Length: 159
Ligand code: FES
Image 1: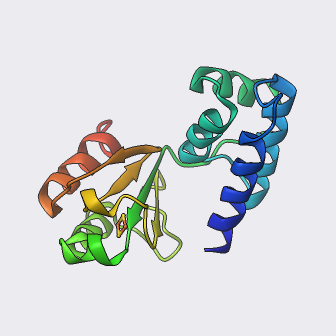
Image 2: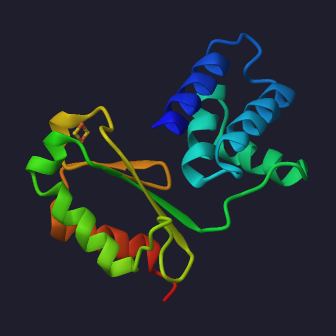
Image 3: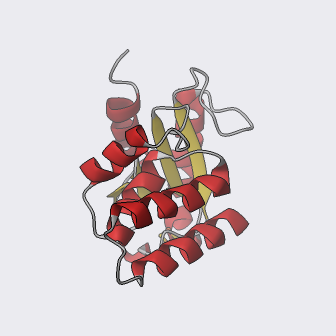
């Protein structure tokens, strides 16, 4: 939860900067975000692009250009909601199914090391529960079945 608050704080700060679109400023934003978890996840890169008003392509270029910026060691990141509204609509069951399907360990990493599963107490769009983000893309109105199908199609498509 503390990580989440720190990320929000960084994003809000940079969102309010007049020169937020400058490449050196974006690189600084990415560096600060990276400090929170030790690397840049797909979700963080997407949020950085939004806060900087820049394209995701530019974020990708900057990450390649600066050797100090590190991408996450996994290919996909799932952010599942554990809030009450999502929970009431079988969000808990969906989460359980995902853990089982991907063989998620205690550290949140899947058995094959390709997917990181994180949870958040509310994704702030309760009206469209059940909600989940995959690689920074929001998905809404999920059921355990459609959610699991989505995870399979995105996170296991190379298998
Ligand atoms: S409870 Fe899931 S988005 Fe709020």
